[in-house]
Length: 465
Image (cartoon, rainbow, N blue to C red; front, side, top):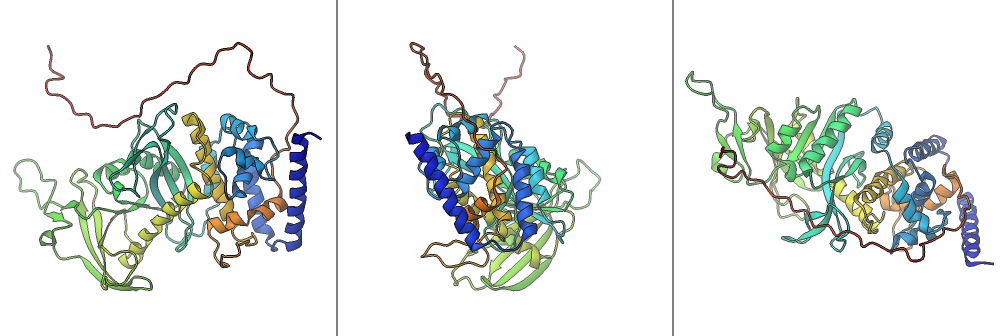
């Protein structure tokens, strides 16, 4: 018997053993949730375009493979029914439809939201410093190493935050930031796409990188409220007084400098609340403020301070937030919603460590985009399986009542074997003719790293000669 036949025989034996274990444990009687997951998988399978069978097998292999050193290691999963070379071929041929997948994700959001559909927006990078043949790489700051940069590709993410507590973030769009785009512009475009397809009120949570006039001006026509953290050295401006009747009307009033308490005036509202983790919190609010370069958009400024700063935990420094929207909820409710933004950071760590997002060294930006489109798809499957999967924790782990994405992925193998897959079985085909004898191999093109710079018009550039 050939080696290829032995491999497939061993896989078949493993599949039969796993299926027996899954049937012995018996899944919970949650037919509605199981049928919802199966329907989602079928619809997602139809959105993958070419090579969707091999791509869907790859998705199941990623969900059930905890450790991998290369893409070829994923082909050793009993759920991947093809040869190892199909892992690379499916990323070359598949065409995931991002718009259809986003609509599929939005259908899973329940319609009984009382206030907002909360979304978090952020961006990260995939480091590729040793890939000179990969086009459109740029410089990216490393948050963990202050003052250092790395070379790679940036990605912007907008994700639905489904719970008030926990580490779940469900991406609606996860797309590459090209060298012709900026993170703020890309995030504004993603938010506009989501709000057009979602006929519900949206609250966007953003970090201090988006807390500036550029974001405000690019999202002024988007029907979504924003809660943004701003830096402590930021300057805001009040509304101008009445027009005196002479000269051009003023755009700005008094200056409000966040790190200079002498420029503050009395807050519109001051409240003290008791938080179970942070202790006593003091909240202050100022209204009718704006950035210097966006005077037409007014904001509400919120200062969050811990009364007892000696206790350990987050929020050691004062937290400055601005709310942009039609009607702001009470500050007792709105300030804590910003803490849910960190679920996006948890998702970034999850896809890098568990879903192997940064594992492959793909050769083209298009392959990187197709690979990245699979990350939200797998995360949504884990979310739909959260309440029906039987937890399988390691001997040194404690059992959990509310499963995290990692724990669900750790327990997915038996469930996937039970519900099956919409992908078709592989069909045998002949051997490739291989590389022709005497045919020359061309060296791949080396691309320079793109460095974004601010363009400054030179004096006298537009003068006629």
